[in-house]
Length: 507
Image 1 (cartoon, one colour):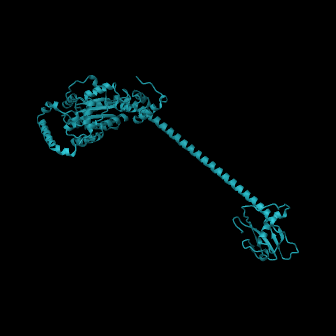
Image 2: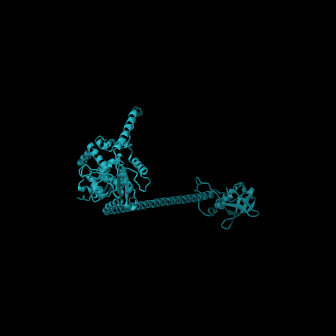
Image 3: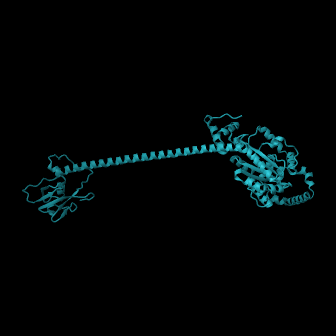
């Protein structure tokens, strides 16, 4: 029964956080993720484990089956079935249909080779050599008398010690895959097949995520049909070309059942006879996370039959996978559109913030410019007031023009900047600055305004903006040279007021 639709807005904060974490790991859509999280009591770790390992109808039944399958008698019987090719129990007719394909992860004890301390290695070295000699001798007798392994089958070791009996050192899944590829090429020569160089669980996860077909090939070097199957079927040009065709989306993973991981995979896939091949793929019609075995090929199989079985299984499952691919493509497109919209919104927001910043800076610069202009204007007004105040004060301090009865006086004819000429008498002992002050304050001296109450402005130094020049011969009577009027000009003189350029200083 389909799960009811749940609105994300109705979830609380912890549930939304769990949903976000789960979808980030599994890349599953919300419609399928929410029901799984509800069945997992919103536990993200349990939900992720169910997504990759698949859900079971009853965990108690699964645990009981696992315990039963791990028992020593059943493993021994299963191994005998694989080696001899004669199953000890009949398969039901329904076993040929799709079966759940579990995700197999090798146990840590099977992947790590524990080495004893160096001292113990030295002590047990003689026993180890004796054990190897006896094992080699038993191998020779087994070759000469094939019935001996069957008689001693009850004494064969279980799967936990399989790697030690076969003399194969337990390795990590990646190293085990590399060892299989190397031994395969040493036995059968160079080939065009592309084996997945990783563990079964990694290939399983990639096939589930990318919606590809996982072709599992398990071989046993002890089986008589292994060499014929590999040379005539797996390495045939038609089979290799079909497997390597990118359009078929096949991931090829192969293993030797003498390795612990491959043996565990054979048990999980209910392998009953060698050589064994299984095609595993995601089956969305069962559940949104299920991986099922859609084809099983056992024993010697001609290349044409092998390809036909793969084609039939892929054709039956292709429609469901295409729907899932379309759904994922739509979700990816929607996600890309949302990301582009969010990116465009962020860019627009950044542009608005930049424009606001520039506008604030422009307004601040304008305010500062206005303040500076106002300050300069106020300074100019203050300077102008102080100049006017100084002129009135200086005009009140100038000595009056001496009368005609004063014989020791200098008569000056001064042409002002306005163009008209003024004649004025000065005492010979007066400073040359009195002439400058007379010209500067002339307009106030001509007016009838009372200037007796004016004071000299404070914090002000007056600078004259002109020079007094005698035209014939030309001579400048600057203030820097100082001196009295009589000593510098004489009894009379003709002066012109020349305005200084801006930046010049007469003092």
